[in-house]
Image (cartoon, rainbow, N blue to C red; front, top):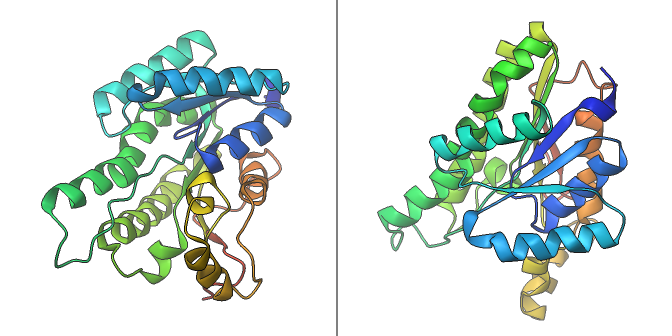
Length: 249
């Protein structure tokens, strides 16, 4: 099966890292669909027009990844329009940072539902098509903070660590059917969110990174492209850190 016939779905695809991933996969010949939340329809249309103006033919689709039923609808619509999703990048995520003492149940649930339950909700709805095709690539975007923890992020760290538990299990279940499942754990990356930080906060973060800089979204997209390619048929169940040396294990 040639790359050109493969459909790649990127959840949270219109975000900072998601955009770089969508562009790179599109460059590599995949038919890319960027997912966004239903409340972001206007932003997604502007995003799609911006990508088109720069030569990228990327489709968009709205779905709430915390809803299994909405993900089922999304998968069915993509399959009907473009074909089955054979490359899935689970990139959607939110933060609700609070110290554990101040964290409310709603903060915990929101982050677990969007960051972790979404991995089940989306992947479960494309998994059978991958099994049938004897080919699949699932790439879960976790975080360095899922590996080392982070003050004020019990919910986020739990969700990101949990993603890799799903990865290792699905890697075993899909291995005999040509499906690879891997986790990528970025450190701090230059996105509109991190660039909006106060200068002193950003400088303190960079000072703690051995490479003395944040990562670029394109650097994350590069490893995603490798993991998504047909050339990578033997790396599975891995958690690949991209953090400039911030955390080594």
